[in-house]
Image (tube, rainbow over all chains, first blue to last red; front, side):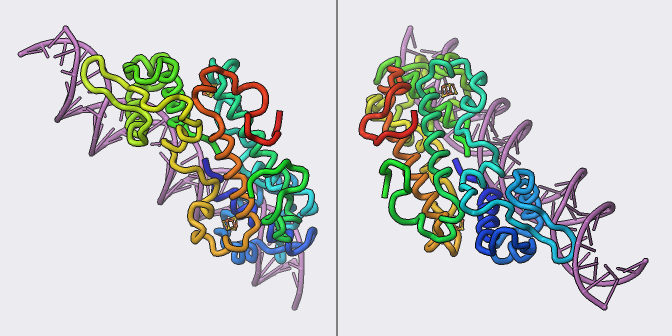
Length: 148
Length: 148
DNA sequence: ATAAATAAGATTTTTTTTATCCTATATTGG
DNA sequence: CCAATATAGGATAAAAAAAATCTTATTTAT
Ligand code: SF4
Ligand code: SF4
C-alpha cells in the first residue's frame, strides 16, 4: 500500500518545473540533481509525463523538460496516475470480474469508498498550492472537515 | 498502491470465521476451499493473524482456526495492518528522516492527510458490519459526509 | 498406535520495481 | 557543416517484494 519511488520522483519533477515557471525549459540533469532523482530513471519517468500531456520534452543541447500545464491545473492525483495508472486499491475494484463475489461483497464496497475518498483527496490539491506550501495547514477548501 | 493478495486473503479468512461464529474452530482446508485461498499460503497468513491476536490456531486432527475477537471489534484496518503492517503511503511518512525535505514539504503533509483519512475509513467499519453487508449502503456513522 | 490436521522454516517462482546500458536523434553554437 | 551537448527510446539487468509451495515436525482425536 505504497506509492512507488517513480511516482514520488514524478511529483518532485513536476514541483521543480512548477517552481521554475511553466513553459521554462529545465535540464534533466539539473532536475535530477536538485530533486535527488537518478538521472536516467528520470528520463523514463519524463516519457510517461510527456505521454500524459503534462510536460514537453525538449531535445538537443540546452534541452530538458518544460511544464505544459499550469501548476494550478495539475492535481497531485494527475501526477500520481500519470505514472502508476489509475488508483484502484484492490484487484476486484479494477476488474470486478476477477472475483465472483464482487457484486454482493460488502468489503468490495468499502474498497470502492476508500478508493474514491483517496482519489478525491489527492485530486483536491494542485501544484500551485503545493508550491506555496499552504496545503500543509488548515482544511482543504471544498472538502468537509477531515483530520487536522 | 494496492493491497496485497495476502491481505485480501486475510480479510476473507476473518470474514469466513466471523460468519461461522466467534470461537468456532474451522478447518484450514475448509476456509481455503470456500474462500478460494491457496491452502498453504493461508497457513502463513494465519500465523500472522494469530500473532496479532485475532485468531487462535488449533492443531491436530479436527484442528483449524478460531476467531478470538468479536467481529464487531475487528476493523478492516486491523485485518489489513495485521498482515501488511501499518499503512504509510510513502516512505517519508514512515521514516521522515528518509527525505531531508520532510519537515517543510507540503507534499509530505498531503500524504499524511491522505494516510490518516484512509486509515480512518478502514478503521470505521468492522467485520460485524461486513457480515451483514450493510456497509455497502449509506454513509458510515460518525463520519462526515463523503462520496456516494 | 494411527491417521488427520496444522506448524514452521526454507525455498522457489513470479512479478514488480528500480536502475542502467547503449545506440540514435535532435539542437545549439561556432 | 561540424562538433559538442543533451535527451530519446529500446533493451536489459539487478534488486526487491509478493505469491506460492516443499519439507519435516508436531499436535490431537479416535
Ligand atoms: S471478496 Fe470482496 S473484496 Fe475480496 S476480491 Fe472479492 S469482491 Fe473484492
Ligand atoms: S519530497 Fe516531500 S513527499 Fe517526497 S519524499 Fe520528500 S518529504 Fe516526502
